Length: 140
View (tube, rainbow, N blue to C red):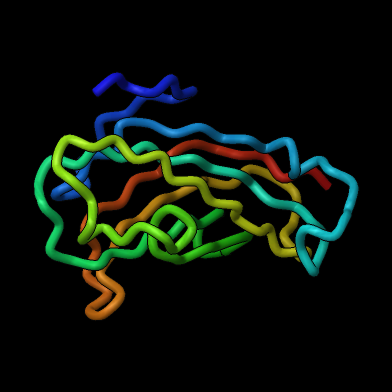
């Protein structure tokens, strides 16, 4: 399989899958408030690239969080590929591009935050894998 072109390469272990990289599009953080989000339209678009190493037994969810310490400035939790491609259907050897729009809460104070990704079992809340991706800056 040809590896996709991605902004940030990784080799993060998430059990049966490996997070091999991600793209980050922060353009909408600076966007004029519009109709994309009820609060203020600010979203961070993240595309995760998963490489499947073994058959997954768990119908796992992905959680993306925008954090500063314990303070949460944004979060989305869902099945991969816009809820359309459960991890139990992933095929060994496949590379999956998995895009999320993480909404930023209107009350989030400006400053630096960490973008974190977690793969977990939504039944038991067992964490399969977790990784801080990078710092993002929320402007005033």
